[in-house]
Amino acid sequence: MAKKKYVHIEPDKENRVIAGHYEVEKEWRLPVGDREVLCILGYACWDNTCCSAGDCRYVFVPGYIIQYKNEMDEEGRFVSQVERIMDEEEQKKIKMLIKKKGENAQLIQFF
View (cartoon, one colour):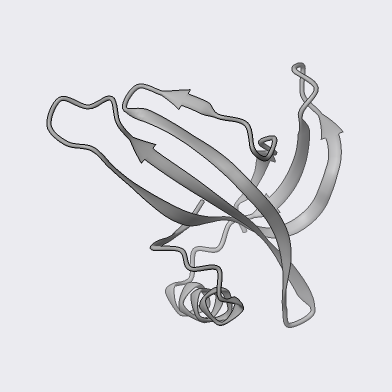
């Protein structure tokens, strides 16, 4: 079991990176069996590259929630403890649940 810390990103705030920017639209807790998976819906735009531009909506899955927003980092952002989801069959099952939710994301990525 690979435990990780996930630092929550404030929704609707532009975050600049070298190739463009991204924004978190919302996060939600997806029930999977007797556990919950943390899901982050966002929008990414690469508009500062030398060769092309584009955008997409994505869902980022940090993992199964162990502790939700149980601490804060030095910048005042909430931090959760998650368990990474490494099993490919488990990832496929979770991807199907996310797609059924109808979030219209072109990319679903696991931590």
